[in-house]
Image (cartoon, rainbow, N blue to C red):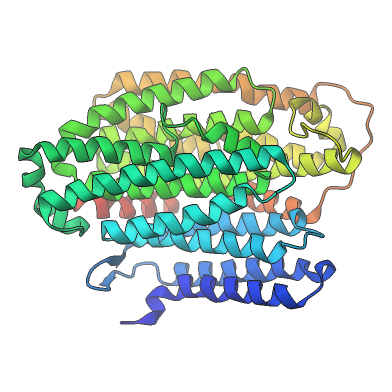
Length: 482
C-alpha cells in the first residue's frame, strides 16, 4: 500500500499530536504559535490532497477509496479547517487550553476526511464518531459559559441518538445483505427490496443522517448548538460537519441503497421542502445573528438535499458544488460574527448577548473589512449573482427544472426570495443605521480568515467552470453506482 495516498490524513495526525505535545511544555502567553502550526499542517494536507487529484485507488481490503468524490470533499473539509485554525489564533489568545482546541479541530477534520473516503459502512461510522466526539468537546469549550455547556450537552445527546439510529440501520442492512461494503450492499440490494428489513433500514438511516445534516424535524439541536458554541466552532460545525453528513448520505443512499430509491426519494423531497421553508421562515424572526445563521444553515441543507430528489448527474454535481460554496459562505459568516463578538466583549466583558443584531449597528463604520465581508457572505447565501451562492443555486435549481421537478424548484426559488428578508436586515444594520461609536481595530487572524473566504466566494462566482467540472467528475463516482 502506498502511504502517500494517506499523506493528507497523516499530515493532520502528526500536526495534531505535535500541537498537543508542544502545548504541554510552553507557557500560555506563547501558545499563539500553536495556531500557526495547526494552520501550517492544514496547508500541507491541502497541498497533498490537491497534488493527488486524479488518483483512483481502493485500499484496506476495499474499505477505503480514493477517487474524485472523496478528494473533492476532503478539500471542502480542509478549506473549512484552514479558516477554523486561522480564526482560532485570535479566539484562543491567552487561553491555557489552546493546544486542546486545535488538536480537537484537527482530529475532527481527520474524521470528516475518512468519512469522505469510506467505502464501507463501518469505516464511515467510525469516521463519523471521531469527528463527532471532537466537536462535542469543542462546542462546550467555554466551560464557564452556560450557553456553551448547554450547546455541548444538547449536541452530545442528540448526536448520540443519531449515532445509535444510524448504527441500528447499518445492522439491518448487514443482516439482509451479509456485508457492510458499500459496493457489496449495492450488488445485493435485491434482498433489501424484497425484505421488510430494507424499509426499516431506510427509515433508521434517514433519521440518523437527518440529525447529522440537521433536516427538519431532526434539527432541534442545531440552533441552540450553533448559538451557544464559540462562533469559530460554529463555523466548523455548519460548514464542515454538515458536509460530512451530506457526503455520507450520498454514499449510503445514492450508491449502496439505490435499489430502494422509491422508498427514500419521496422522503428526501418532503424533508427538503419542509427544511428550507421552516429554516427561512424562523430565521426572519431572529435577533441573534448566530441563531439566524443557524436557521439559514437549515435552509441551505434543504437546498442541497434537492440533489437526492432529482438524482441526475448534473443535480448531484450541483449539490456537490454547493457543498464547497456553502463551506466558504457559512464559515466566513460565522467568523465575521466571531469578530463582532470579540469587539463587543472587549468593550464589555459582561455582555450576555454579544451576537445580538444591535451590535452590528454601524459596523460599516466601526469594522469596515468585517462589514464588507459579511455583506459578501450574506448576499452569496441569498444567491445574488456573481457569487458562489448564485452559481450553486443556478446549477441545482435549473437541473431540478430540467428533470421535471418544477414544483420543487419553484418552492426553492421562493424560499431564496424569503431569505433576502433577514440577510438584507443584517446589511441594513451594518450600513444604514447610525452609531456614535468610533472605529475599532479589527483582529488580524479574523480578518485574514474572512478575506480568504471572500476570495473563495467571489472566485467561484466569477470563475466557476473548473470547479463545476470537478464537481461533475465527483458526481460520476456516484452515477457509476446507479
